[in-house]
Length: 565
Image (cartoon, rainbow, N blue to C red; front, top):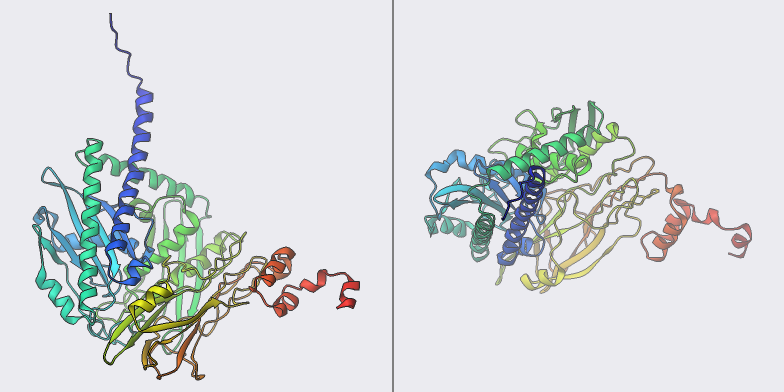
């Protein structure tokens, strides 16, 4: 006689747990395929080559479940709030299969008009079970273009309110005509917006296939599992940081006068609250930062140190609350100019680290170059063009390792390769190299910065927007005896210094030289391992003078060897 073995309830529970973890990782894979589809389809090199984008899966309530590994915190952490913000304008109950929403509103999206957010509802049996969202940078949407010269957002380009990019499968060509009519590169602008549409469609198809594979009617149970596990992991990590109130300040160059960032961080068992009161007021230039972008990078800095192993989603972000009175440079209100908002926003992780160093002394990395330098060059004449690239500085040294050189921390964006940049515009990159001694000296050395020289391939006059060139006055600070990284420097081949964030002319025949800031050092340089100093010297990362006078390398040589020299 056949018998049926009793079900082992504990075994079933284990399998359920494993299956949910597998599904969680599969969701992340869906996001990653979504992001890769965007990079393949994008027209702009800043997205296609540098990865200036984000992609994510959200549940039916508009809560972020998973994000792609590829992408930037400023995009994905703002997008965590964007989906519900957009659904407040166009209710979910009105959406039909084939519908897609879009906006580039800085206060609903990623902080400036160049970033478009596209949200696609995913239907299963005529019911919305999820949303796919993606964000990327569109090089030009009219107005002044990428510049800090705007006095209001109205001057910075066309703003698209929340509306349908596609309705029941039909693309909104009127919307696209508005964007392309205002753009100096209409073909590229149209292609980049449609690439967001395409990548979401790719992600939606994969998500539906995944749900059918596991016979899932919805994502509710998986959402609960992801949020519960993430909340537990976040809470456990927060318990490692002592409860208390900590303060930090950071001084930036600003536009024409310094800008102060202030933070008051309160750590409890359940939450970290950050109050940015005391930061400088908003200014009438385009480096102000909407609070949504500020909160995105402040949260990233805290999570990078305290909860790096906990996946980024609604629950893990919920434990961090960032506030500021309206009207500050970190909480600019409409219609403030915000084009170069990342100058402020991407300095927030270092501001958070200043607080966390007090809570966890000796465990926090030194300051980094911060805001990536956006290189915006344009030319007129027979072949007008706009070229957008990024030039990277050094990361701060870590408590047990050197800082990474020419690495965009905290954004994670890469540079457009020289070859691609030269194909896309009539430019020639004459050099791109490490700068010796630019990383702050320390037991662990700060990451090196780079020197880049670029000019017109035809010898024509160029126009430069210097909106993002920050830390020209003082380099990033070291910790525990580590030295500051080198300050940045921008100048022309004729010797002209560029020291403010305005628009500059590069005369015909001249070249532009950029020297980005280096990362701060960690610990007393005299304590640096002698072999590391010798290797740095051999590789040209430090000079003989620095090896001798800062690291005291010669002090280790026998007296008779000194005599021979």
